[in-house]
Image 1 (tube, rainbow, N blue to C red):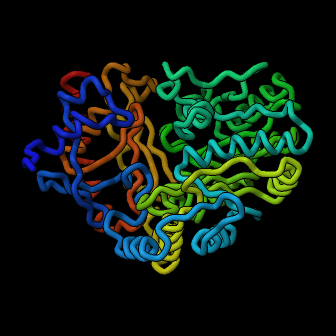
Image 2: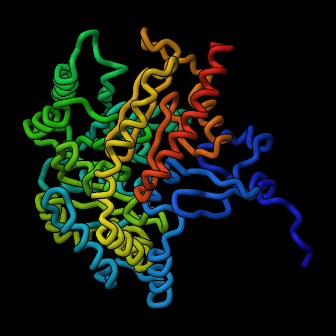
Image 3: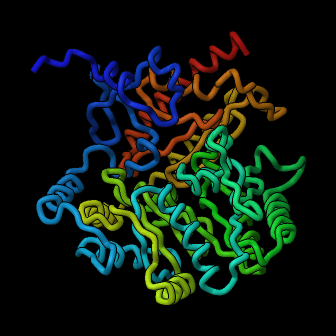
Length: 463
C-alpha cells in the first residue's frame, strides 16, 4: 500500500464537512489540527501548546487527560460494548446512572431519559412536552417560548427553539407548523445591552416578565405549553440573568400552567458553583436537560430528567397507546453511561464543586480586571464561566460594525498567544476546565492580557 503523504490538514480540507465553519474559505485557512491533550492544555500538530479556556465546546470539565475516565470506558468496552434500552431492555450502567442523576437533581425528579447530545436532549424535551399535553387532554397547548439569542442545539426542533439567526438562516427555521407557529421567542435578559436608560436590574426583569405574560395572553394561555431557558445563557454571550429575573418569570409560568424546561447543557455539573445552574439561579424546572460535563465530553451522552407530574402523564398515555414511541439507538449506551458514572464520581472524590467555589472569586476578578480597557463595554460571569464584551464606543454602548469582526480578531490574537477562547459575536467567552489551578488561571489571564494589549493597539490604529 502506498504511504499517505497528505498532511492531516490537507486531508481534512479535502474530505471533511466542518461544523460552524466558512466552508468556502476553508481551503485558504486550513484547520488547527489538535493531536493531544494534557490537563487544561491541548497540543497541535506542530507541537504548540494552548490553554483551552473554553473546555473545547464548554464540555471538557476534567480537562483532556483524565485516566479514570479512559479506564472506565475501556472496562465497559470489554464488558458490554453495546446494548439498547428499547422493548424493556436495560443494562447495569444506565440504571446506576439514572439513580445517581435523580439523587443529584436540583429539584425532585422522577425519571431520566438518555440521549447523545444536548441537541437531542432538548429535541426530546420538545416531544415530551407535546406528548404530555396530548396525554392530559390539552392538545392545543403546544407552543414553546424561548429567548432571542438563546442556543438550544441544532436538530430541527432544537434549532427552532434557539434564538440565533445564524442557526435559522437558509435552513428554513424555525419550523412552521399549522395552524400556528409552535416556536416563539421573547427578549433575552441582557441588562447591559437592552435595559432602558436608568432601568435597574429588578425593573428590567419586571419588564421582561411582563413581556412574557403579554405574549402568553396574546397567543392564548391554552396554547402555550412550555418555556425553555438556560440558567446562564452560554452561546448567546454568557448572559447571567439580572436580579429577580427567574423569580418573576416563574411566577408567570405558574399562573398560566406553563412547564419550565431548564437547559443545563452548559451550566450542569459544577460550572456555576453548584451541581446545577438551577440551584445557583433559582429555577424549579419540570424538565431538565443536561449533557457536556456529564461525561466531561469524553463520550457523547445526554439526559432529560422529568418530574413526577410529567412522567405520570406520559407513562399513563404510553399505556393507552401501547408504547412511548421515542428513543435512540444509543440511548443509555453502556459505555457512555459507565464513563458518565465515573465522571460524577470524580467530581465527588476531587471535591470539584468546592474547588470551583474556591477559585470563582479570583476568576471573576480576573474577568472584571478588563472592565477599564478602552474597547471593553461589559464584563460578566458566575462561577467558572464568563465573558468580556467588546464595544466600539463603550460610553455610548455602540457595538463594532459587524464587518469588523472584532471578536473574531481578538480570538485570533489570543490563539497566537497560545490561548483558545470563543468569540460569540463580540463577546469573548471563557469557560476553562473545572480542574484549573490558581497558577494556571494566572497564566490564562496573562495570555488574555497580551492578546488584549495587541487588540487595543490595533484598534487605536484603525478604530
